[in-house]
Length: 407
Image 1: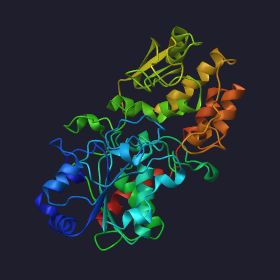
Image 2 (image 1 turned 120 degrees about the vertical axis):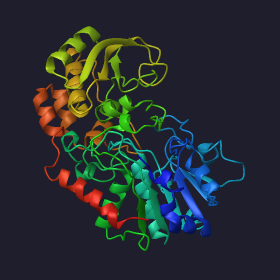
Image 3 (image 1 turned 90 degrees about the vertical axis):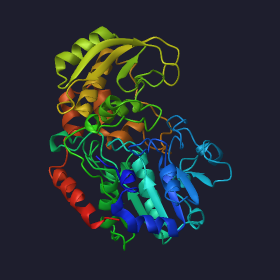
Image 4 (image 1 turned 30 degrees about the vertical axis):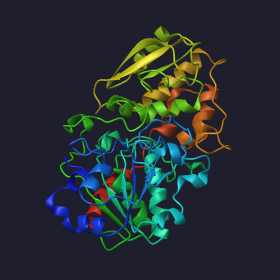
């Protein structure tokens, strides 16, 4: 399997390499974006004689040091880059900081994007890429995406989660999309760009270097290369597999395991009975996963320093595992066990102050309402889990669209 970055050094992209050498380029990337030899995108470009004039970094910064929702200033965005290089963070303290400014884009003619996504709507890198694409096109720049495969795979039966309602679009979902969508970053950007009237290909405003040799129905475990953590709380492929469901916990006072070594797999709270929760969740049925009781003490974030009891999930058969359905079951059982202690959080979340985080993540207020009412879990599942029947066809069309978008 060859990513877009891998192919920059092959003999097939001579025209693109020449363009990158001859024109000033900007680069949006982070340190998880490695080629098969373990080199960062910056190193590969420098070896090709195409040193970027400006470097943009997403949430967490170039080196993935900042925690979730932690503003990254320009000075801290890329501490391992040589002094004097121009570096701009695209995750600051305001919504405006999420897009590159026209002034920042003046120094380049081509914007290159290479980011590691994890295939879930909430993960912010794809939305950083979309905002950067739109800003660059508006400034008259050509955008090239070095694509990477979706680590969760793209088997049709694994798509999960209804698209958001229009009023609940946010930085954890700028466009209506299933939670587990099956697209690559390049496929998603090409689909949205063409939908909005943008042109594709080397002579258009967006081109994509496609992945070669990716079997869409397989996860990252078959790629023959290590899973490089793209953010501080995404340490393993197993974390990525549970994340489409586990991230929903960010909207509640249940710990999603931040501050432990196994975030999102580890779930609990000081007031839960982990043995009971594990028994009840197992009895409800968790295809493709093993559930066991767990105790943990988070070092930071929710319930920091307190002994929490809950469960740990281990994905045993990724093709069968349904993370959204599993974590809805888990939240429902946790709320039923301790209805007085369970809470839906009301705080500023990803630059949004008017809507609860759970509404933004679920894309509908109905999940929050059903949880707090203690409604049967079947209502939760029927509200959030089904995907638009037309979505698998959309994924197939997105894959074909990349043929028109080739760099």
